[in-house]
Length: 92
Image (cartoon, rainbow, N blue to C red; front, side, top):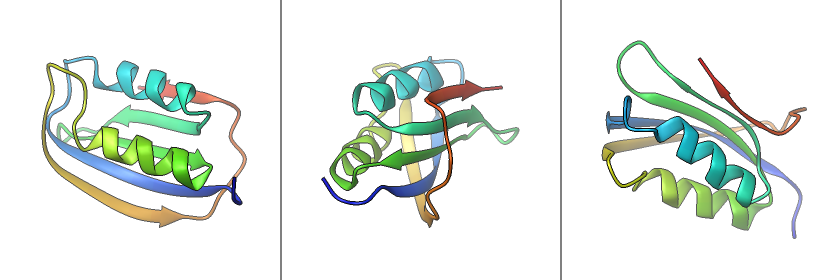
């Protein structure tokens, strides 16, 4: 297990109103990640996740698919500097 890494991701498509944030938070917690996920006014979902490189890679791969009722049309990823986060939260 390497040093923690962090990435901010923006998911576009049919990703609001389908439980995307809740499912993303559950997946992130199961992988031992910390950070947050929120809806954006333009209809996309943004997430900031931090943890072990392998866990973060698995989470980002999941974001590219999303939960069953979502349709992911695009995923933008940007590296972030790891910070202080307590758990993984769903933000409004």
